[in-house]
Length: 340
Image (cartoon, rainbow, N blue to C red; front, side, top):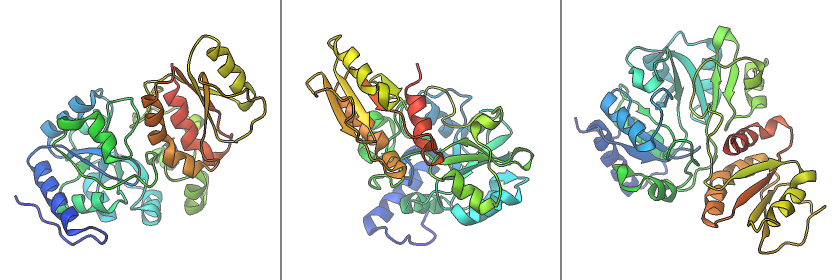
């Protein structure tokens, strides 16, 4: 079958549309394509093709029981890939899709076991990036993309096409370049077990926004035992090669000095921009100020971690984010990146 775009996507150039059509042909032939979303770059394969799905696991070196998120092009396609969809999921989809929100739902049996890690549930989302939507539409309504982040398993997620090229390069059949990702962190994952909405992974949609739309409480990960395996749920994830440690502001510089005295090169990453207790900076201790706004911090985080890795520091010491719901996603990524 020769896939064609059902409708031209606004914002895509003729060249981009041609690249999307070529990418769709690769996917229909069982290949893999890295593509941009508003969150991070994904490594996609035809969800109905188990051999193509296995290529994703091989390229990423990903455990076979770690499920993939399925990307679809329309809210109405939920019925095709899932069943027993609760009213609260429809309500959230109408408000936030396309966007960085993934639903954990009862899967339709047309989704292979290799996509779900053998579970009866599947993660589904509709991405907001115009290239991602154009690619999904080119595949047609009876296909979708299973796509984790386009990087080695457990490492830093890519937010530019260059990141994908640097890490996976020729192992991927095609890389679509859609510029830097606007959100920069993965989607929020929410489940609806016993009709109780619960965040399983904080991400691009804030807790307060979900509760406003649902007009009721949404549980956080620590409010109940998580039995569903989801993308990015392992304790160690999103990690740079450089050891990363998190300290409250009052301990940050003390720890930096102690490590520097061992002839180690330290980068101190702050958000509060306070110079209290800061020693004189030197070749042993450097400082980088991240934004004090959680949205801007999240948008930069992965690209900065890659930059810091290239700078060959011995340790990255990160100022602990504020204990505030708006910082949930950033805190989650930093904690997993620092797990040891």
